[in-house]
Image (cartoon, rainbow, N blue to C red; front, top):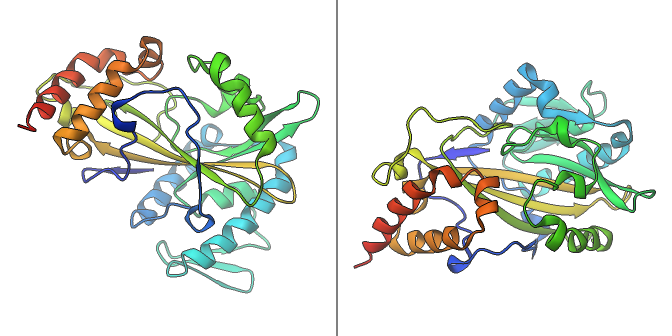
Length: 302
């Protein structure tokens, strides 16, 4: 959940095309968690939300207890192996050198999913198979960077219900997503990117807000923000639950789209994006200003 004025880590515009697709890629296990130098700042922001708006950012059904404990064990092992400069363990104590926090893994008063979420910049969601419905449903989440959706509206719902507002999901993605969840193997995690553009850089956006200043073709670069979600999916081997992680990167548009080529690619993808998707992503109201700015930057390629 990082907000930056520097270069964006991902520009997922697929050569200027827009396609409604899963876009899954193999994930090397060592790259599961996307930590960086903003860890202390981002974890402090999470902690504040959990203290002041807990019901909005954390939820866990009773059946999430065992998968969450399994996730916490897996996550701790991963951090000790792959982020050893930050995390260390002595007995049941886990120490975070970036924040100075020490967590008692054996006697924590926190739900294991809550504790897991306080260790990493990612939001964490747990999906478990519902045998009666033959689908997966959301049984728990620690969600501090929602992009205009509310956890209270999604907890307990199946995949199809969670994605019901997404234009084209039922027609094009529901069956492939259901098949993927059924076939996902613990040893073969995957990742994908999701993106949008908005006029509010706040990571925590459960609902749309109106910016104080409306962007124009001259000011869009300063007033609009590229929001990219790095999402991963992996199955927990013991419980069979699926962990869905979301690491959100928010970059001011003029820093993210620094070259004429990137501007041309994004403009082409936006023009190819269906109108229903533009409305769903809240891009439609800012599209004229956005395209005006992008076209001017693209023309600078000479």
